[in-house]
Length: 434
Ligand code: SF4
Ligand code: SF4
Image 1 (cartoon, rainbow, N blue to C red):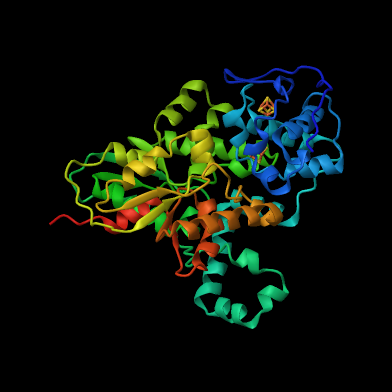
Image 2: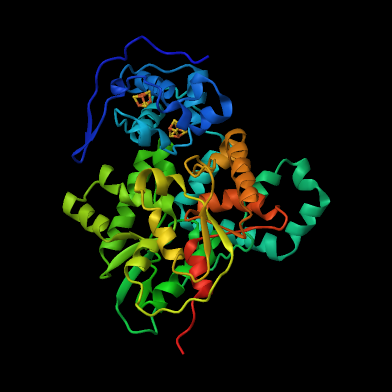
């Protein structure tokens, strides 16, 4: 049975950042409307795994400066930051931001009780530094191409070393070579865009990056890929490393604002959400005008392509069933998932269906698959089951984290189902000019 809390929260604290009002934790009425929407409650069925209970822990940290118990911190840490709770909360709790603030404060407390695990520390350190990440990509690319991967898989050693689930996360072909800085259109030129590739997209999701370049070129846009860009900072921001996140944001705003382009487009919705929320970070040396300039030119790649779709653009027919997975970043916060359906609906003969239970997080949650497999795996398995029931030939998602999380399970279905970004399918079906 669920517990309901009668006690009141601590001292009121108003949070205001760049004019955005964030409700106080004490604004939570404990009405429970968020409970059934929370994926961790869906798995664990206990009140400790609900948003309203976590908000009580957040209140302890932020308002009372009290270190919560180990159990409370574990339940807080299980949160996937999917923000489904925000979409139904009558008090409009800015849960995601309150959680970010509490994690930052925890990190500043003398003896942080939440100890980041090895995999989390390693992941954060790697994605912060592109050269380190590129080095790792080279090693992993060699591991795949040399045949070592197949050998280890067949030997059973991965299972003995409990590395199977990590290995499952690797995309089929890691390419460590950087993309070119310029890709010029050969169609009638309509402008130029800068492509945000962040930390891992170039190596781990090369197919999506090259597909986006191909489609953008085909509709008349030059594509610039600035080599100085870096990770969007989302995972650092959500794991209590606000300073690192602000430093990464500072770099990206400087790099992209210096370019004379019509738009900055991103392919991964989770990165897009972070880029859209740069205005809420305390980024030294940038004023509202500069952050506004950055935000005004920012587009999801599917939205941008839709906006600029040429009148007569031939696409091959694709008479198959395509299931669309809607990432939480896209559905709960950016609320721009419709652009994916609109873009794919341009394909003749396609049968487009939303994946069932799209409102429920797939469990990827940034680095959750690495740090919290007991949460990520059952949620991912539910998605694969829904995919199987749908009978879809292809699974579409706009977020690389979700794609990597779901690809292993989708590939094990009979017949195997490929997971792809929407621009990947458009690029495949685009017909060259005659
Ligand atoms: S829906 Fe909002 S107000 Fe209601 S319990 Fe959840 S967080 Fe609190
Ligand atoms: S962000 Fe998602 S996982 Fe976290 S409390 Fe809200 S609904 Fe639950």
